Image 1 (cartoon, rainbow, N blue to C red):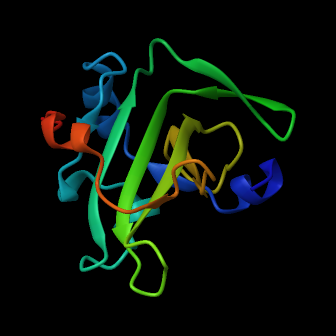
Image 2 (cartoon, rainbow, N blue to C red):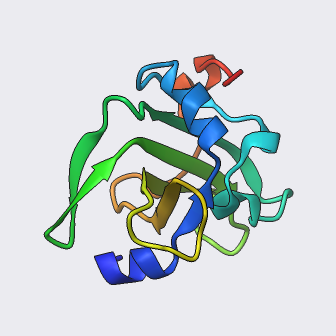
Length: 137
């Protein structure tokens, strides 16, 4: 997905979610379904397996999307079931960035994606380490 497409599909992310996620200092956390941002809350419940995120609004990282630099404050991965796919689990990745692009959203942060990374989009099973990741409180 290029930069222009990512911005056109951007969705707001709650400030409170990012403040709580930042307390983990880029440590991965499983999200409670009540915390799901709009970008994954739209996935039907029977298809969405879980979501995890990491980030820190005080220590962002730089990322390049279509040769355009972005300040990324968090990353979000959603794991979903796709019965029409040859692999039982699809992993979608989202970047969370400060909202400097969409004045039509009041949120201070936006999700960009989903990005379907070739190396880990199609999975045969949930990664083993996902079972030990703590829940975001």
